[in-house]
Image (cartoon, rainbow, N blue to C red; front, side):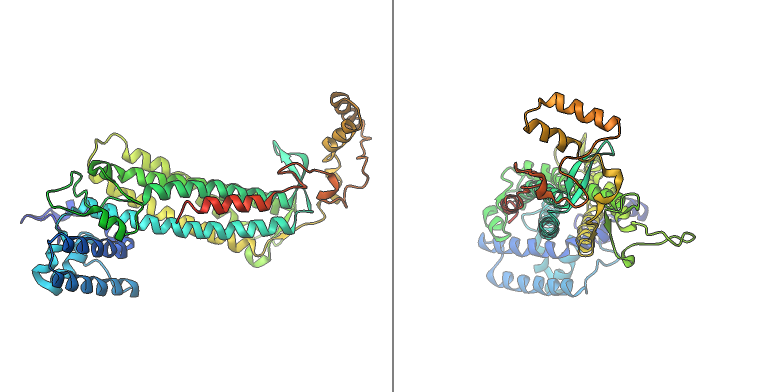
Length: 440
């Protein structure tokens, strides 16, 4: 196998198979970022005299050709090539001869894989930002559309107090703001340049690390070369934490949808072609999309713990264990993209039951409203609570505002921030705009 570290001896096939594992497949996701990092690196090498302008021009053009192959899907790691870095250098050497080998001056595979990962994860976070904003917009639109439609609220899985579809949709929209903060925090950790830290201790070449930082669009370099190498694992952990935050939001929303679709609730409905049936029960409409999403989000939630365990108990500096982080994180990023995309798709077809409260089982939904009305009328709260409780126990409770089946959210007179009559969707939108600025 072609390796950048070969000194004339080779590992056995059994050792290579065990140590390389799935890495060659996962490395294809890093291909265009490896070329991007190499293009910045050679420009810097030319600026400090380690490449001539002619060599820079030839190498840059050859890297562009490799990038074109990657974009067209006409790029692969050859069978005897260890990783993406080896493949790119091999292609350059085949085309340009010894000149191709100069590309590795001043860097190690350690900082090369780090910069590839940073660029890749930065791109992933930008995509997640876009998907999260799309889902946020749909939730806010639904919140405004259905802000007057009352919905039973539950605590301890028991009927509790009036809510609304506007409040339900809006709650998940605001929850995504928290997730955007997490994505922004991960982005700031990711958006630092490790290139030039080499194997973790810098080197004797007069590298211009600020130049590659600027060329690659990073906010800062990792100034300390050891700190740059220590970012491996921590970077993945921060991204995993952000994924976990998003997954928790989607998991809870999926659970709500599974429950609300159940005929015992009947709060929401989806067209038949978005649900599945039973092999023996003709009436069934199963929420398979939401159940699979719930399960996938649970898998995503395990990522941070797995990354943390994998990175524990290692002294500073590079260890081969880090290679396995791609096996953990990359598939979960794919799952997150799928879940965000599917949640957004399903919301395009959600149907809301606007006549829920006509069911007599919700006759006690307004007991708290009645207690508050009597308190506002001058009855001490504890006395009003006792009165309503007795009426409920004796089966004679009636909400004093009359028929509850036709009530709208605005009829209840809730006015404080975040209540049924004041959802603050405009303020939540402003909060999301500020959160999204953390990822630029």
